[in-house]
Length: 301
Image 1: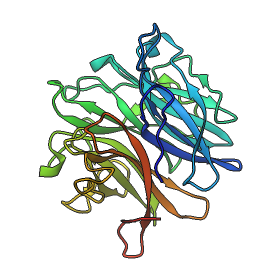
Image 2 (image 1 turned 90 degrees about the vertical axis):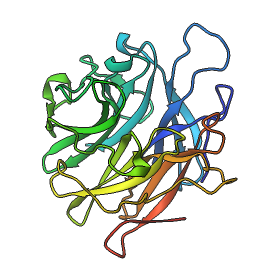
Image 3 (image 1 turned 180 degrees about the vertical axis):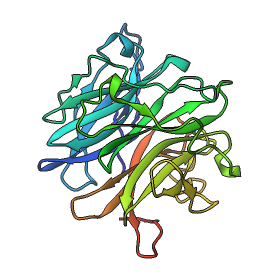
Image 4 (image 1 turned 30 degrees about the vertical axis):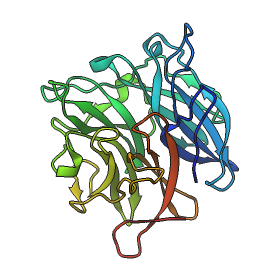
């Protein structure tokens, strides 16, 4: 699988999020600004559909709409609850003021914004107050929301978690921050100064977090950690689970920003972004996740 969106002047698709809704797969992703000069020209969210997870066709866009979104929106996370698609995404271009927003849809393409947006930004002396890279999972009667932030010096990228009752409307007042320090912070050499883009799934009664280590094109690579409660995490290895590609390959600059999708048949798929030109273009791809050894292993589908 290789997917990119060329409708804004260059091949660009980042930050995938994939769901199955009714009889089709939907993928939400970040779109770049237009290459020409126009009044409204920030990041947006694209929508593509597929019947087989490999061949994707663009079917729509989500443009900034609310005042908090005016500089752009990106990095979506998605979940289907009671037949509705809930999209959690970030504002862009506001530095420490970027935050997580929420919208809901019955058809996966037309979304109604939460009037309380932005719904979440972190607090504490360990964070600058920014929240980006939303990912959500239904876990034991709660919706867990994973997000990335920066330290007060805006140097280190860190990961935190919040929760809301599963039967709530996920508006601003429903969220409780569940950490007073990072749940994952860069420690390994290959993670450099950044952990971001949490992608969490359940397998055999435990939660598994695929995450991006290092900033874009440094190179960013994908690691994995495991948890029994969604808050305390342990890495499964000191090496990347999915590294960047060899010189000359399509993802030699990075394999980054994962999203884990578990299909109705139990098959696990890891979507991710990559490029080989230091970020001039961006493409999306996927690998299958094999659990036969008890730990995840990425294989080409």
